[in-house]
Length: 453
Image (cartoon, rainbow, N blue to C red; front, side, top):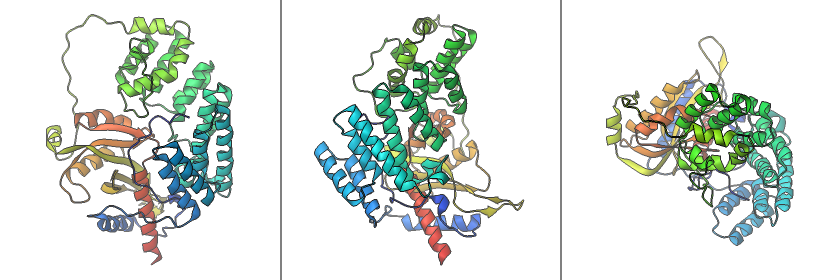
């Protein structure tokens, strides 16, 4: 089976396996100041060395570590050997069972194997399954189960069982409303292919975002309902600002490559290729859509217009000063916003969970920036934290500009795209951020240990 798009092939630090989710750890009665202090103490320990995750100490954790190795194996034989060892340690290792499905000799055999993996996941999660529904991706031990369901849905799509695939994708969204896996894009394509315009509209409204899939999805749905109309033209104009490369591939002005990219950046050619490969059947099955699109994107007479310059606000420096900071194109940072797993009282006497912004360096899982607030930080706060990490890293190192900033598939990236472009930094989106997840887990364990003392 094909690998999922949007999955980075770079090596990432492996988090501890089979750990309790952050929301279940007992932090006790703590204040934001004590939490911040625990974080600062923890970061002090990491200076000058990479984080040592330590050995796995349970059969399930050891099996999961073998799965990580299997994913990076150079040959099928090496991968199968590692999978066999993992299943000997833990027969219900869901990710290992999924990898067996990936190597199945036939599509139907793959489907059968993915169902075995799903059943194993349900056994593993049985005691806490109901409590996880809605935010399941936040529980590290549940991610293999969600990946198994996605693999099944993908296989059902490839084999033409579209209605069954729709139900699988919908179930994934029920289990994890934030959709960190990005299955909503595949579900939207199936809705179009099956002529389920009402379902497509509901999905687009549930997950408003500036991606090629949903921007051009709005265009196609508008054409199906209203035809060639001012509203459809307006939506196409907006979609072309999101990704200008898509029409060329839908219209075959540029041929699709024989191998579809495994990763993409927002607005780049890879995103356009992936979109066209996924949604071209939906466009072709919509009478008149391709003909209308060709006419709508036909070159118009050029008119003179003044160039506009994007102005962004950054703390303590101008964009030119940021560009002067040394940059390593291979350096990757991860940025996300999470709630810490402890309850404190705000000024009104209400119990709240503080919010933590974290900027983590990917290759060694070191925190280079962090901010905490009792109220959910806005977009400006995240931007300030990121730019402060560039100018004054939390590690007290010299200013440094990353080559790439990675975001989870939760929509946070959209408002950063133009700002990062001005600073010469690329943007990537991923199903999960393992380095950042690892640091949150380490912080939770360290804080819990301090509280026990």
